[in-house]
Length: 332
Ligand code: 3EB
Image 1 (cartoon, rainbow, N blue to C red):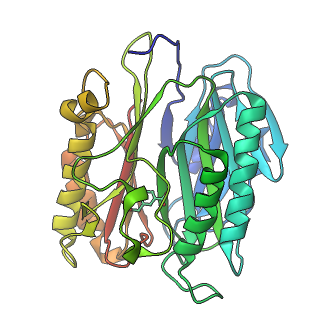
Image 2 (tube, protein in one colour):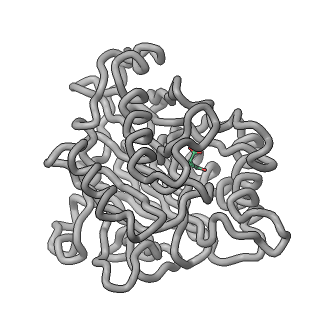
Image 3 (cartoon, helix red, strand yellow):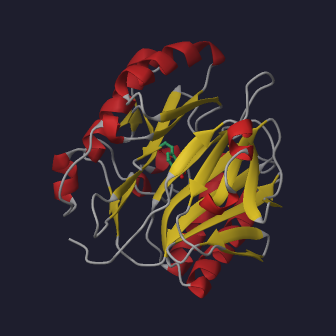
């Protein structure tokens, strides 16, 4: 359906040692899921975001966004570190610990939108938001995740921007951090899931401002299959959490949600030819609330996804206290 030539940036999930051994010229940017967080920094001239997503004893997972572009340019804009290769932009930012992350999220997202417009990568197609104490109360007595949604939502409204695929998930420390990918052209299709109410239309009982994200984003390619980016997906049907307290069923509902989202019927509904199955997701990140559920969830996911998929499991909270598991993924 799209005639633009698009290359996308494949992702892999590596150990720190494998990351250290990579040829630098294949990397656009990276996220270190480690035991400490902080502002994005330069490593070998490329932007790297350290996130506190691992517990003591868990090995670091490095999420690497690759490039085959011959020239990677880098820069900094209001604390955001970025790299771009002529097609894709990787950008990372850190809000850090604060009494109210809403105002900071508003500023950070406005800076991000300003950057992508100025650099000519207007199409933000995937974003991640990691929030320490996501379900805690902030100094205002409101929920941290609610404060964040309000600030982020205002930035989307003020700039009239499309809502892309996203993850909004807990972190073990470091306040709020985020990173995103943007494309030079506009050939992105933001997908909704017929089994789930669009997040921006959740009822107000979940808080003051519905979250601003799509269930997935599809990028077409002239040369072959496109790329699909699936948002953090949970055991939510319509707007309600289902299978409270039952991690096996939550995992099954989540996987079924993703299967419906990426399947042929739903893509056709959005004007996209073809369809995907769980086996086609080659980079998968799984978030599990309770450490004791990790073996069960890992086994269920290994059974459903391809043996060729990179799968990483993180033990962090999701945005609703009753969500025990959340899963995201992308094709390559
Ligand atoms: C949900 O479906 C679970 O705020 O960016 C999933 C993906 C969730 C993204 C976000 C939140 C976000 O509502 C939570």
